[in-house]
Image (cartoon, rainbow, N blue to C red):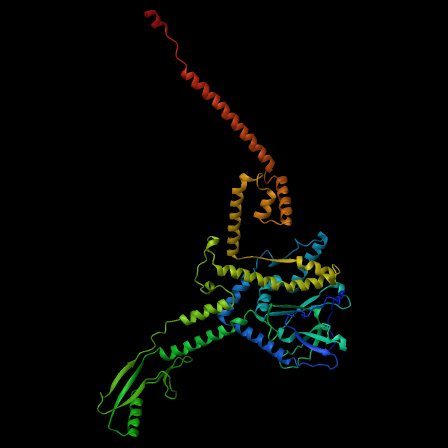
Length: 541
């Protein structure tokens, strides 16, 4: 076997206390092939069976992806997961929860954009995600200059899963009699074996050993614990697809054989012996049968009697005393238009691929209604796509880790503290998600409007923003800064000034109402005052 090719990061390992042993072995969920070496007797394990099994599984998954229904379901998933836009990238890094300086954040963003351009993710995102989803695993070799590692990753080369495999070698240390009671799982060496010819027809031990840190390895997260093989998301659809194909093939054969009507000729052979009766029957068949064949290549119609057709008529002899020569018609199949079984297995196939069955019918219209009208299957599908994005983002995590360490931005110890706070935001194009978010926002705003009379008495603004709107501390700071900027730029009015203006307008309205009331009272008094007596009436008296 060739020497170790690649590089690995050495971290300061903290020694575990002997007083804190665990009887549980470490969890290994990456599908790596493990074998034990060393000890009193070196152990050799034939890895060919594992390799060949995984090789055959990848071949099966790729054949399944060529089926029309499976391809349509895969495209639905990928189009929801990877949204391409002319102006925006399908994925952006989110460092809002990362507590480091702004200069470090800018360096991380720069290196992330460099890695995306290195693999051409903005243009090849659809193909990369499809390849990972079908195979259930994806490998990239991180090419660096071993003499100048500070230059970072120079190239990222895709490796076919049929040519590479992760191996975990457990080196057992010989123990004395009093050491057998200690829980020691030995020293573990992890590396990859790469063979350009593939891992099917060659020995599993022949190939190039590549260091673990030199390969970006992303799995589907589905593991067959019995065989320790990583499975694809297509695995549970294998049986359903085989059943669907058998039903379709049998249906085609049945329709071809039963669709046309065939005739039954009953030939009266009288009292002829059996041999002469059969000879007479063949003569009648040859006399009346017309075997015309249409040649699609030349466009000719010719009489071809060399081939037997499975759609030929039936010729049956009839003895004297019967009804004589008779010709009847055998009807064709009566249930040729039934596709219930086909539709059943198609729906079952979509369910096995976690795609809503409603998407199977391409003629179904899309209704932009209220969120209450959204089917539960679509919500489950949205969550499933989110899980796929989360798992696929491990590729960016591993590449970014290597690039930042090689560039000297962080140390391996720093990465362990930072990796949980680095997130990746994908573009969304799911209208159901948009409807759900809009409907939830409307409900929250309705609650806030109902709480407004009680603001300052029973509820505070901080409570509303935290418990009702569910705003995080980072979002609060960003929104406060944005609102302050809007006030300074004059895009919106200051709420305090608006409140003062409202109070002034209310006071003015009160003053106007008071003046109007006084005027009304004066007019009322004037109307009720008696009129003075005239001079003409007094003189007459």
